[in-house]
Image (cartoon, rainbow, N blue to C red; front, side, top):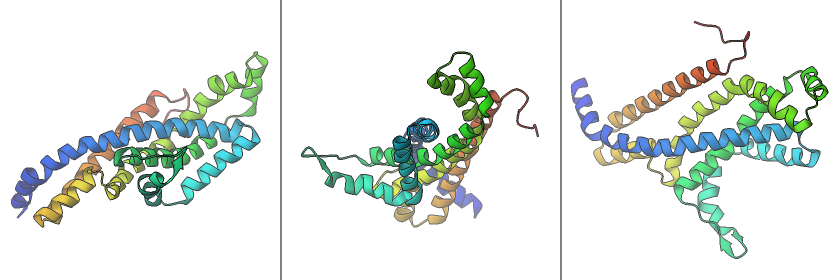
Length: 231
């Protein structure tokens, strides 16, 4: 029985999933990078920005954390074309809508980790930087933010892991990534066990690789004297 399952999976399922893996990578990597960058900017604005700007950033975070990701994807793909700007409709293809949706949602969560990291830096360091002649922007960029990012990295890394799994939702707006391809194979062959069990292994391997890379990054960016305990 197991030999039959493996034969079917290797001949019918895995070739399709291997092609879909590239689609998932094109979806996950830019979403994670844009989400991290926007999350750092938003987190910094929520702590150090002018009050009106902080309120806008807080509203953005509340909106994207308070609404389902599925609804957000539906909006960017199905509803956005009906909004006209200067007489022109904004139309995104499925991949673009997915990257936009994942990046904006991920950034909202990551900004919370960055905000917490920024607030954890003692005010004495800021006063010392100002005493050395740094202006507020230099103090944030060169003294506060590097430490805050290090402290927020475990939380931000956890969000990247979630993003890998959430990428499966892109299949609902016709992106043929891993989950969408597995569903098509299951429907075409009437062999859902092999299709979904195999795609689950693919996601497990992706998450394992991401966790290993994130731990390596944590070690490289660790603050001397505060390294993560070794197993």
